[in-house]
Image (cartoon, rainbow, N blue to C red; front, side):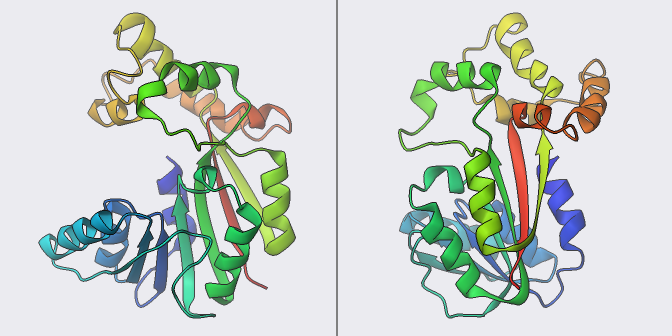
Length: 231
């Protein structure tokens, strides 16, 4: 849902210069390239970068890539129309430095789009404690102060929250399907679902569109999308 929202807001990517920070295995980078963007990847792992380039070649597109941390992006100033950074900010301790780097590499009028988990929901926090074997020690989900920090650097920062009642799907995996969080990544199980198996869940997702628009309540969401512009 988060990426669908971001793609709607990005619009036509033809000939756009896009930087994917924390690109991982390159799934998003390759998708953006297939939509016509000129994509550059940055990831902390050199092996991830090489594998992502292989994925691109398999799908008939070329993507550039550099092994680096997000706080020191190895690309020139004012060079990208879009910076996409998914599930990465919550791994970064020096977030002010990261936002300054994103600001530096964006062209004037360019935008960044991010997806990250939120800190406050007690159900998802219990899941995080249980999923100790499939999470890293440096994770620190986003809070109110992080959004304020983004607004310090970027113009017109927009937030869009996802997953409050929809998190009942995670409860179903644990209580009904008896799958421990360490045995399988719940967010990956979602891709095995169909409209038929999610019939009971779709009304909850619809109600979330109301709940995630309510001040205060929205901070109980699992994920937040941030969108900001370089003035």
